[in-house]
Length: 133
Ligand code: ZN
Image 1 (tube, rainbow, N blue to C red):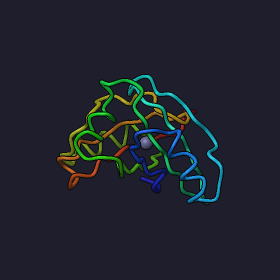
Image 2: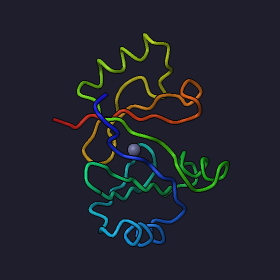
Image 3: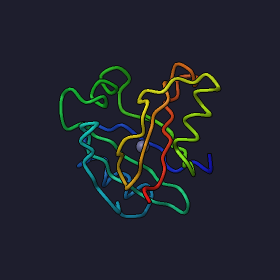
């Protein structure tokens, strides 16, 4: 793993949270993008090396809706950038971690992504991200 690539925050409404984070970070949102596999809309902010991803459900069945129903808005996941996602998945499975998706899938922001089950990571949802080449 190279570094924390972004932190994901679950929100009810991007229309409310984008202006809020623009004020907080004093920087404009540089991208919004729908991710169909997760039924979510995302919005990205960049400060130095770090990014914040706001995530809003656009369908009732979205995992983000279920998350907000259970826990409310807030910190959803931490994403680590990896050089080779297949090699990193193999390493983590050998170390005993459980994957939510066995194969990397298309994520937002031109990335291939994979999630680790929070039951093995002290309750923190971990995302691996690799820049698509
Ligand atoms: Zn993410």
